[in-house]
Image 1 (cartoon, rainbow, N blue to C red):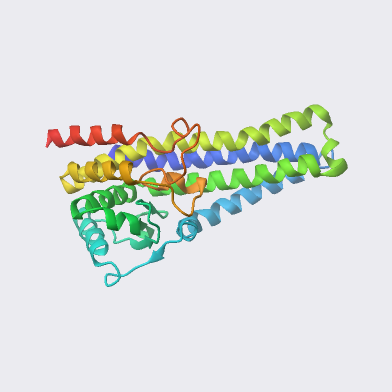
Image 2: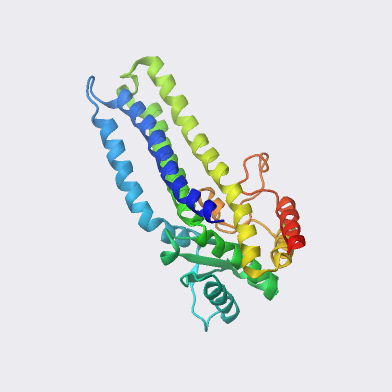
Length: 294
């Protein structure tokens, strides 16, 4: 587990490297299309903007995710059962007590975010609190605190920033390519075609990065949570309930879908292929194998 934590810390650097490579490609495309010949002002502007955005995102993305989900902060008196479970798990694992939030949504789900354990946030929907018994809720929150302990939240934050930034820049460039007047022909038709391909492909690459890192971290958080509670069946039962009773959240955002314990989006035609989460049946089977080893 400690090797996995160290690997997650290192992978944060890799994720930000991918972040800047993709944005660098988009910056080069923008420079070819809109900068004066022989200058790199647009390219530099994109990279400087990306660096500033990444710095701001590192400190602000956790709060942004909370705001986008509609979560509200709670104290012990507001939701004593949830607060007590999170507090007990924090004491058991030696993890700083995270800020606890509740999302007013009937769809059962939960997520964790923040840049490190000292600045972590865990949240559960009202639907989750109504659906789960104490053992199951403890299993879910142990899973979320495992994301905190394993530094998955830092990597998830990086991915969140990557997907949002690439999506925004790609959208701006594709609009400019088609509606930018005479500047769109500055680089010639070949540059324009290559640029449009890069603009279209960049968000897909960003999404694939999101998928690649998210699924294994869900398995790791399941296993770490099971070791924390010493009762894998609690989380296994919770996942079974989520599969049966789960549904899309009222506030949906693809850029933060990977933060939730189960997929919060409406299923689409390619939902299985492009899901940020491994199949629940596989997760339950792994948990029950772990339970057999105790």
